[in-house]
Image 1: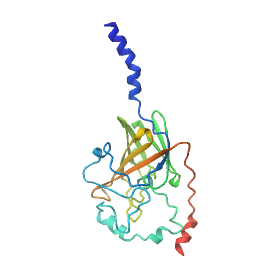
Image 2: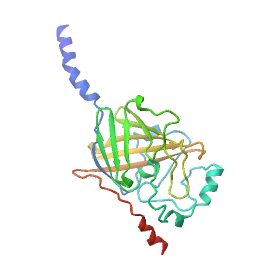
Image 3: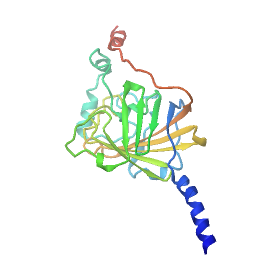
Image 4: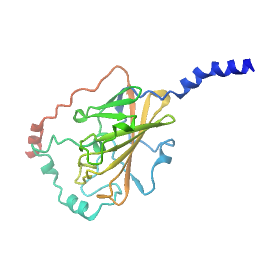
Length: 242
């Protein structure tokens, strides 16, 4: 009996170590190839969800939304979209929300603590905070920002992040805008021995869409690097006006 108890006590540190979540810390460069569906993350995608194939540098053309079903008001607004107006001096440095920014062709840097993860996006110098404590949930009428309010939890080796309170911004950079009430659910996990970070970004916005959208996103780890300042220069719009 004593030997059994001692064996159980000896195993406790190993069990505790096994329960430790993976560490996502580091500098991550977006994969240049269009990421494929991940067998670990794909089963968690909700029904009635279309996969958007615009991660990275790829973008949809005018009136192309990757299978998203727009409400009549959203469709009419998209029809009025003018790319030349978007590249005016006043609009060229308009900050997107994380719905569009996360999949862009720019690196991210992650700093992970016990109950918090900070993700810095080089794109527009955005900084996200994932709280692993529900007491940081904002009230329904809380302020809307481009990074929103992100509450996270672990499901095995996957970080599940639910973001609300996002300020209206583009979804596909071609006239489709999400509302202030969009909900984004992301799942992150490590692959290839920690050299690769994989995510799904699923969003639902019943005020704008009749279905959901999801993006598959993948990054490669680069040792010893850090994100740098974005420093958007609105004068670049003058090149498009000529």
